[in-house]
Amino acid sequence: MAQPRKPRTAATGRNVEKPREIALLAAPARQELVDTLEALGGEASVATLAAQLGRPADGLYYHLRLLVRGGLLEELPDEGDGRRYRTRADKGARLQLRYRGGRNAGAAAVEKVGSSMMRIAARDFSAALKRSDVATDGAEREVWASRSKGWVDRRDLAEINRLLARALELLQKPRSASRDKLIALAWVLAPLPVRASRRGQDED
Image 1: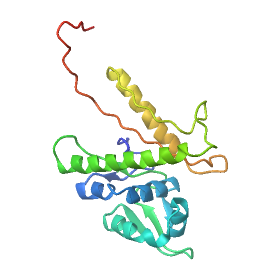
Image 2 (image 1 turned 180 degrees about the horizontal axis):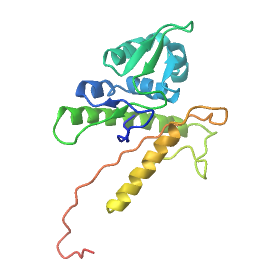
Image 3 (image 1 turned 90 degrees about the horizontal axis):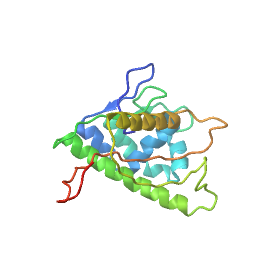
Image 4 (image 1 turned 180 degrees about the vertical axis):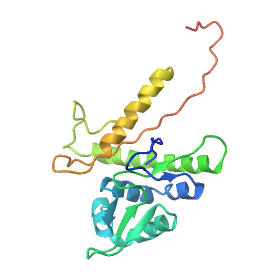
């Protein structure tokens, strides 16, 4: 979710761009439902979702109904394992937020979604730190929180976006016997205002 728009391919994500659609994802419970569905290949039963989230199935129906009515999910016929849901993106793709900056309803809705994402990330990070079996350094590090700021040019910014897009591609690969570790990755990229230098301070 919250991915940059990509050129159309065989499997494309559905753009989520209407403010009322975006606003549906401001609730952490609905974000997690969509994220979990996407991690499970875009389709799953309520029982599977409940097991993955560690929550009772009855508590998910309210949020699932809202996501269906909002056009982000589709309810499928019961195939013997209970109600099933899938995202409105093509198989193998994910929902993509699309918005403009400025004072508009879409940006206001995305601001709430972003804040919710950070709350979920803080909770995930805190829970991971309490575990003794997680890798905290090395090539297979699983727990990492960092914030950095610095000066970039257009080429640097393009490279940062390429690396973030590549991270999303890795996370979108389907589950397999070897791909059995479930992780969450969240970040914020934001331009900062450039402050005037203090009097007498040299600039490069």
